[in-house]
Image (cartoon, rainbow, N blue to C red; front, side, top):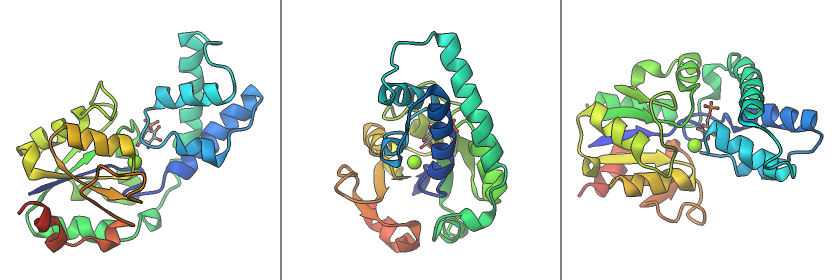
Length: 216
Ligand code: BG6
Ligand code: MG
């Protein structure tokens, strides 16, 4: 039994910081970006997020690759400033305890995140030592729903995909887990995460016994 965790929305709520930085970029471009629009960015890579934002502003196809890279870099600079102030108080309910319990039980634990800032966030939250492997946006070339990030996590743990369970809050991440041949538990509502084996509201609802049931 091994566990693979998404980061944003599973271990920590970074969506609010992504939102501030994207909203400010939209403002500079002359349009409003709402919290509802921001929902579409969850689990989506940085450049794909920018494309969605430009679409919301009616600006799709209006910029060169160079200009888009500059916008994404600008957004990221602001985002990094925000996350560099994070503290362990921002770890989502139950996450640290569940990770600690898994380690104590000798269950492999890896991160499978699209974020290129994952290491910074884990360091700020003091969670990095609880992971056996960290696979993030700097180590993959294909975004979720492609299973690459989770398959690399399984490989780093020396585990077969069928012996892994993914924890995800985004539909694209659940699909990635499924395509990788893994079990998966949704953090959120089954209405959105219908492909999950089951959903919980947070990791505070998780126990090793509940996890074991999936592998029987
Ligand atoms: C995902 C987030 O984990 O990482 C997305 O859910 C984000 O919202 C993506 O766009 C990429 O993050 P970063 O830190 O590399 O810009
Ligand atoms: Mg997520």
